[in-house]
Amino acid sequence: MRRWWWLVLAAGLIAACQGNPGRAPSDSDFAGDGTPDFLRLEDAADRRAFTGWFTFLAEAQYYVAPGELPREINDCAALVRFAYREALRQHDGRWASELRLPAVPSAPQVQKYQYPFTPLGARLFRVAPGPFSAADLSGGAFAEFADAETLVQCNCHRVGRELRRAASGDLLFYRQLEQDLPFHVMIYLGPSQFEDGPAKWIVYHTGPSGEIRRPSVEELLRHPSPRWRPLPGNSNFLGVYRWNILREMV
Image (cartoon, rainbow, N blue to C red; front, side, top):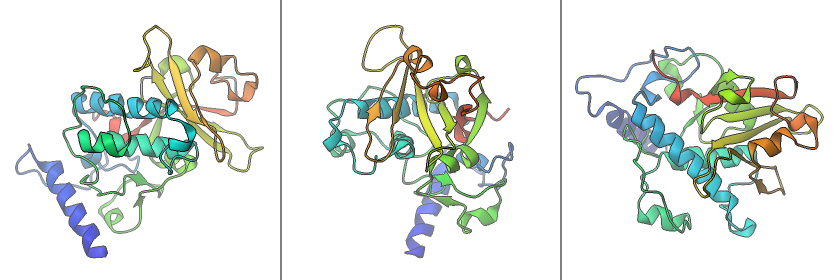
């Protein structure tokens, strides 16, 4: 099994360097956020492709009958992991059939790498604190699973506490201390890819034994329980976050 993982990793590293001959993967992490620079989508077109597919796949699950959702989507972080991973796939007819998607957008693919042949293989999520180092490649710092707390602490960076700063594909994180699982995450969609109109939308899974909901931004701002309103004055709202792989290397 270990040999298989190293083969996947090697293939991913080779793919990461394609189109830039002579560049070897490095252990640089310019932001010190734990995400290696060779994983970041430095090309603007790749960032747009990722966020387009990420939001499409997350919103598409809202229209799926509860009993037909992918079995892995059983809480808020699972929906995020699913959309993140599948956004990095090669999106062909076979892939769409396996996910039971009735249609897929005619949209560009991420070109830098495709899952599972990423620079880190199938282990997309950082699960250990601290900046990236070469030792992390074999030290268990990355995994296929990450809960909401790990996503916010190790895989994202905060954009701010005002919702107006959110861009499509950003994440809204909450910490509700009175709950058994205090961390919760929602996906900011922006405009819908399924409906016309000026409304901005958010999608999330309510948790174990729950469901997927898609309120508009205005509806969420008027949530009956103030602790779920994404407002700077709400201490339960941690803010708007963006994936580290989308952090521009400037």
